[in-house]
Image (cartoon, rainbow, N blue to C red; front, top):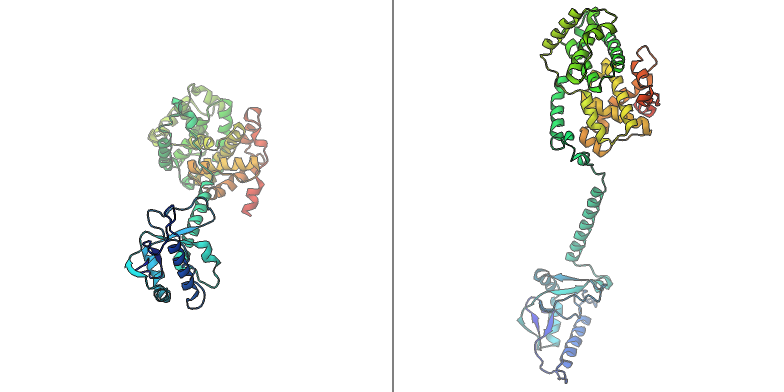
Length: 434
């Protein structure tokens, strides 16, 4: 005898063995054949003549026996919950009436147990029959999952940011534990080391051209005394900060430069040039007393504040992020020293100036724009933010050695600086500006 679900009268399953013949092994034969024949007759008598694709002669499986066949990989089955089964049963009312007429033994006393699995391949094979809504929703969800996986793969393929401090983990001088905090403090304090880009307007006896001549000469003095790079950058910073706060006569401008270099040497160098040597290189234009008096005036004007970040400290960090070699390092310092001479470059903060110098050096060496994710992360500047300053630097490189101020050009034409000044400028940066 077969019974049907109260909500699914068209779905029948065997409940007993009445009318069935027993074989030696106790299997059912006759009863099951009769029920399968009755279902085939029902499907043929449906309205329209086409069997509903979801009403197939499949054995309903209970929760205990609902197991997928692993040996049939091309057979796709998907579960339907009771909610979906009730929706299907509501569309099969003619089928349930025909089943009661052909098989009076059908009873509505049992309910659907477990879940029913539908052969999707057979549903697709049926002609002119729409796919059930829940199957369309499932396929839509599968497409969304595939799309999400593609997006995740694209994110994975992005250029990673390198750990530039990992190789120095055992070097106590690299202070890996604190280096990020140190440079965060530098970025916070670099505004204090900057001066107004138009401070020369308050000077009545000197101008930006005289400043450029002074710094170009000091670069040659710095090279002659073989001083550290930190000393040169601090010297220029002291000069600009002092001139932005104190009015200076033209005949005292060279004295300001000499005293600024003396103070920078006392702050950075181990072996400091004596005052007599500075007087000699100035062709004895000033006395020892004048040098000491200017030293006192400059320190009091600057309130003894000499611990401010210059472009040099950012150059060291950013070159490390760029994984630079000696050639890139020398060319970058050639670019940044060209900027020290130019008064117009005071409008850029030290960190931006250092990053743009390295970016311009990379473009000069490689012949194309290059700014990695690692450089962008550690400098906090994108390529677009560097382009304007980089074009200025490329223009300075193009005209270097053509005017009277050739101190930087002659310095970097020497072999100990790798003939960095002889590199051809990055013309494509200037062309992109036009």
